[in-house]
Structures are given as C-alpha cells and as structure tokens.
Image (tube, rainbow, N blue to C red; front, side, top):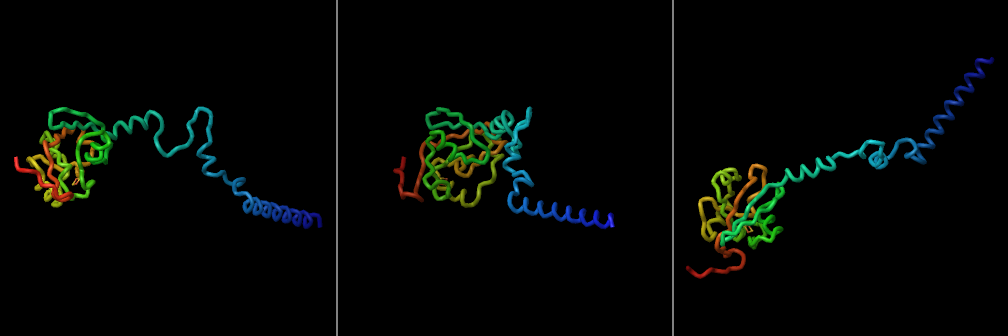
Length: 184
Ligand code: FES
C-alpha cells in the first residue's frame, strides 16, 4: 500500500514538473535559453565580447593589408599616391581622392574617358585581360598605348600593389556626349 502511494506521489510530481516546464517555455523562452544577443554581449572578466570578426588591432591591420598603394601621374608629371581598397576600381578610387579621371559613363563601358596608361609592363601583365567591350572602347581612346586600360575596369588586387597609372593628356568622348575634339 505504502509503495503504491509513493508511486502515485512520484508520478504526480513528474507531471507537475513537466507542466511547469511547458509553462515556462511558452511564457518566457528567455528563462530557458539565454538569448543570442545576451550571450553576444556577455562580458566576462579578462575576455572580449563574443564576435565572429577580428577586433581591435588585428582588424586595423587587416584593413591596412586590404588596401594597395596606387600612384596616379597627371599630364604635367605630378604624382599623387593613394590607398585603394581591394575590389575597388581605379575610377572609383580616383574620384574618391580628387584625381581628375573623368569616367563619363560611370563604368558602364560606354566611353573611354577613364583611359589610363599602366606605367610598367610588370603590373600591366598582372591585370585581367580586357574584355572585347573594353577593347572596343579603348580603340576610341585618345593617345592609346600598348599598356592602356580603362580605369573603371582595373580592379585593385593585392598583386597590383605599387601600380602606377598615367593620365593621358586628353580624352575623347564620342559615345556619351558626342563631343569631337579638334584635330591637333
Ligand atoms: Fe566609361 Fe570607364 S567610365 S568606360
């Protein structure tokens, strides 16, 4: 008899516990499982908060590494050295740094006003080959050279660190505004 009563009490206690657990889960999930944001913001003594990205100096170092140095040389021979983030086009980088590279079609391969001349063959050979569209536009460029490229198509990559780009003395822009330069 005593054993039977004990078993009944035990079963009731288990039922009560599982009911309490169900109520807790349905009304306040935070009480059961700590929320992600809470875990992420948790600061333990001597530890930085959880993060999936590098922090502090390591991050600054990475950012520095993810930029290359590019020198633009204008038609008067004046040089301007800038840092260009990996993945950015030379046209965009020039615009962000106040360098006079026109880019009338904003990189849609419909002009040749972003014409640049790669100053050393070593870097030129490291560039991706120009597409047919780029070659077509380059054919219209004023002062075309063996190492001419369109600035909007030259994208910063680590191996291009130290790239030197000369800006041609003039540009030609038939495609965008119909302007025809007078013969020299
Ligand atoms: Fe027009 Fe580069 S900006 S082709």
